[in-house]
Image: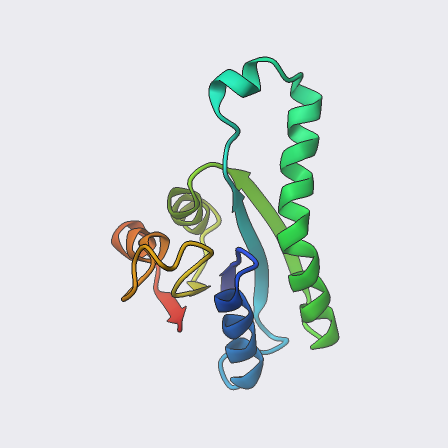
Length: 140
């Protein structure tokens, strides 16, 4: 099974990773994992005065802040995972990546860094559920 692990570095990402490793009947070394994060775009007016190389380096560094600890966690669990990121709104990026990568499942935390805005279910999670064509496992 091809699984997209959507991460943002929040406490809910950590809970989701704990769930993945605690349920080896579903998640194990036989699965194919891709850890994905979305980096918010720099506002257009600011991006206009920054050269493209510097901007791309910034996006890569921001993504690596989220991806590196998750990659390390997977390695410690004996699981192999590819990593990927896109620039843009998280819900849209996750849904598009799940579709274009032909993933069988998306696994993500129910909330992210802005969990105070939506107490029942995070706005990114809500939008992923609404727009994603593959099954989504939300871990609270």
